[in-house]
Image 1 (cartoon, helix red, strand yellow):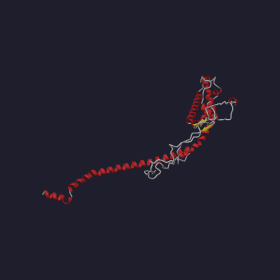
Image 2 (cartoon, helix red, strand yellow):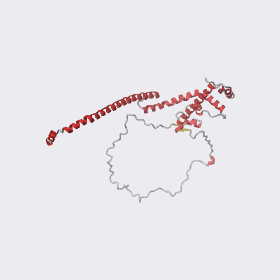
Image 3 (cartoon, one colour):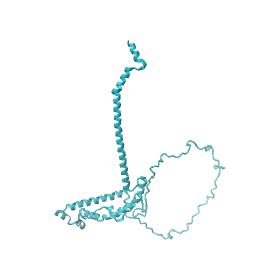
Image 4 (spheres, one colour):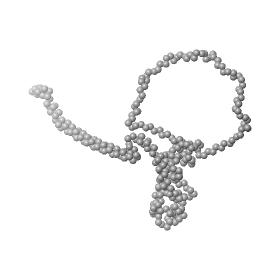
Length: 305
């Protein structure tokens, strides 16, 4: 009967029906799902391996570019801060070389100046003033450029640069002063200091102050007897003649004047490029007559020059 069937079904906790149903479910659903997860995991692993290879290649390329850039600016790249600061020592020589090389642009600047004088309705138009000044005086202080004379003394601004090794880790280092909670015992602070005398009742003897003040003899006679000398103070430039702060920097070291110098070089380059293009295309009678009254430097200038 059914009770016997149920008894056999529950014997030894086998539960064959549920076990068979669970086995069928695992075969039909769980195993394929796990296989899909394994395939997806393998795909992700392959993508990660590919990304790792790309990152390693990128690291190598970045390191190569880094070393090339360091070689280009003349440093080893071990301690960037120290090496870049050391390069500051070579700036004066570099700036002096640039100022010396700018003298080679004298003829080009003169051509530009003559061209402006011919085309602009001004007697002496301003033409690349800073470039001309550096050609004549070199890389001098900004003070001399502003006031037209050399300073009596120069007080260069100090560079506040903190040099720490990249490998140093001093941020977390702290001095251990022991137990900060302990306090010093000063004893009884409510007591008063005994000076051994009564300051309230004591009298100070200031000497005899009732006599009139005596006149001080300075050893000179009347003012009219002293010959007078007139002193004339001549001032030129700024008072004191001391170059401070940004005025103590050289023209090519000072950012403002350096940018102006670069702008004037670009201006001269633009003029020469435009003039070269005009000389290569000019050939008409109109263009020839246009520069008839021009200065000789403008008329005789050719594209080859």
